[in-house]
Image (cartoon, rainbow, N blue to C red; front, side, top):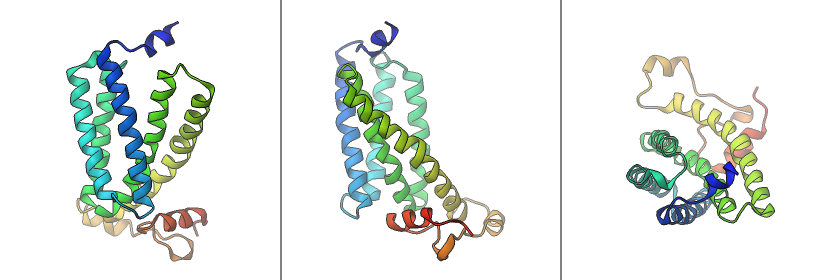
Length: 193
């Protein structure tokens, strides 16, 4: 009973917000996937588009908090996302990581779709598969690669810390700072020596 009440839109604005989010999240997923394949729009456009959307959505929720179940949590999440999207602005090569991370928006869209459609089995299975794949497998691996890369490339990281954390090298000499998704995948599959 509580789940059905939580899933029910509170007003017409909530329905509009859900619909806009599904479209934007699917577009973000598509733009990220295309960028990772080396096609337009490119990582820079994905990063700045995501910043713009996150700011607009955060302001929309702040203005109409009743249209979502947990407005404070969502706005706090948006603040964290904006902080994370700053990394590729400081280190443009990290746009690759942003595009990888933003693939998760397929899972976000499926979460809304399954709720709007009354939790059909196909939507539940698609949501669960993408949740496990993106949030439990890809994110932890990406976090490790991003952390090492940030610590070795950041302009704001202290010179002493940079000397203490020399660039990590993986087996076969592939660096974690590699610019191609294929290199990331190949490097992640090799054991660290």
